[in-house]
Image (tube, rainbow, N blue to C red; front, side, top):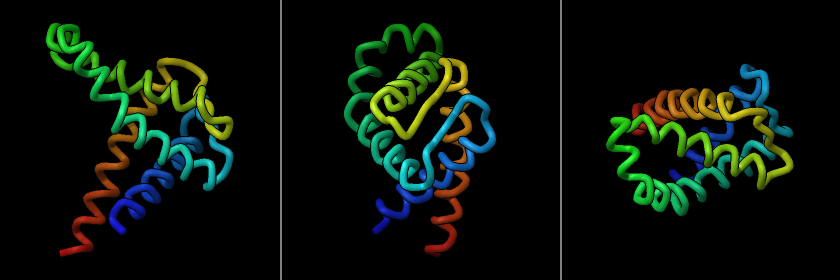
Amino acid sequence: MNLIIRILLTAVAVVILAKVLPGVDVAGFTGAIIVAVVLGLLNAILKPILVILTLPITIVTLGLFLLVINALIILLASELLDSFAVSSFWIAVLFSLLLSLLQSILFSILKEDKK
């Protein structure tokens, strides 16, 4: 149940960011749910592999290279899905930062409701 709520909250965050950021397009809430699932899968499967492969660069840049990895995952999701489009790399970086911020806010509200 918690996984479904997290996916729905991520979809809400994707819709909000698509409305706010010029260069991010999502085809409706159903498309946002699909984006949330695909981003979750890519983050679970591909991100750990990329983090291990790029560990020296990540150490040298004091962790800032993780922003690049997050942007690349978002761009990959954009390429895989017809219902989701990101116009450039820098928009993907900004989308990644804002999505993380919104998710942390929404998930913290979810934790407060459980108490």
